[in-house]
Length: 208
Image (cartoon, rainbow, N blue to C red; front, top):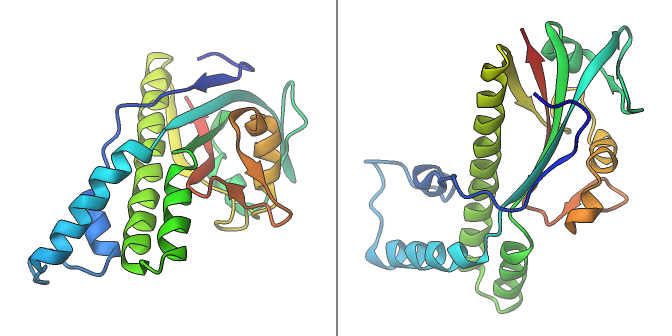
């Protein structure tokens, strides 16, 4: 595994959107809910349109852990992790992967367009597809990193994103700066929310 090198993946192709999850988020239950032909056709139509809007990309950097005390510090960077969630996640880790993935602004723009046109049904469907798409892209990058770790005789922890546990959403700004996400066209606002909205940042521990 390469340490302290910022890796850009301008195209991530090996991902698959979980269609069952999309239907579940839309309120349909497998083998329990009868889906009307109109809704089925509408969702498939949105899926087809979404395929041309999704532009998946990712980036990551691996930092070796320097100290684990009240906070976790790293070599060659000022980024610092704090809180019980991170202490538990990284208790056996010797390094950490900071990662981000996005599907680009296309879905966000489509949701806005459909909402402004009063087509809320379509807006909701695109929102759900976008959420599952970025999750699928994150899983794809996670799988790639897992393969790299195993080649280095290491293992990865679960993926953990800002806003969960006691890893505050404000930490998203630290990852944003660490990964120089502005260079990928990603923006962050005063509330530490990202745009495109269908963007995920995360921390993954590396263990032996």
